[in-house]
Image (cartoon, rainbow, N blue to C red; front, side, top):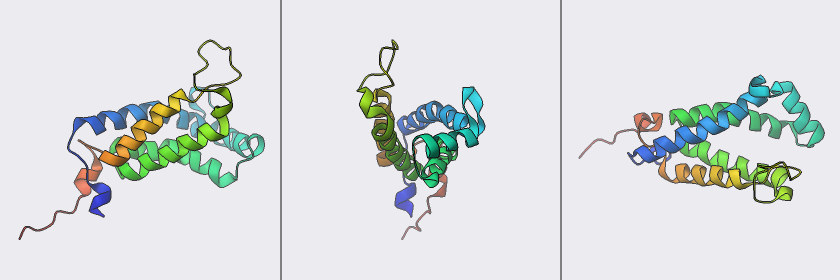
Length: 150
């Protein structure tokens, strides 16, 4: 169990946790709470199940992961688990929605949708956190079971 919680004692994972969390959490709040111009839980679930034809459990897990998983990631609680889950989520988002639009974001409104360059950054940060753990100020560091010295 300690392997899941161990972390390098560095500022870098702390900064990555905060940065990734600050970027993803508002998207989750759009989906769950309807904040920032979002459709809220019911509207988002209708879109996922009706328009995208995703199973309800996938839509539900996306919403929960983007809110509660990200809050836990910011806190550094089970950092590796949440970071890995966010990696899988970003890959799923790319494959289900962004591949047809190419690499680049739609900065000038000339494409029919957004490219996947943003998600490459998301995946890179998530993989880094999966490898390093939560870093400084993570709850993971508090949960490590200290082994008695012989």
